[in-house]
Length: 152
Image 1 (tube, helix red, strand yellow):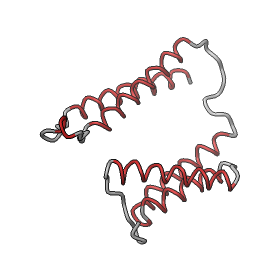
Image 2: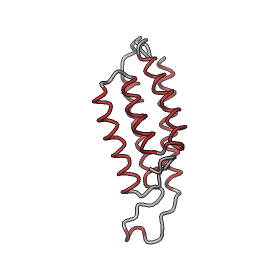
Image 3: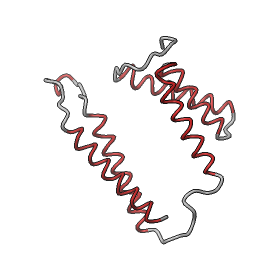
């Protein structure tokens, strides 16, 4: 399983570097340095740097750690992986139909409930995550988010 983890880490490092390199090719609007406009490549570039950097840190940790025979996934965690995978596919399909706010709230709350979190914690987390993402993307970065059937 160690070989699989090393290969996955190398793949993520390469993906992060590739994403950062490609994002650096995106041109910023004219005068953006004087108008405080971040430009279209800012977020993808730093996301690629973050993914590649964290994968590199994980790879170094993996290479320095002594070999242990612990399973890659504990038997109980396989269900959690399946729940998150199915919920993510459902979210991708639902966001265009129901809109960003509704789909994100249901995704976060539903996933946490399915992973045995209390209803109160799941609801609070869903409100904070949905609200934070909405404020970040829709208000601050002015990214148009899917409106869906309800118009929001």
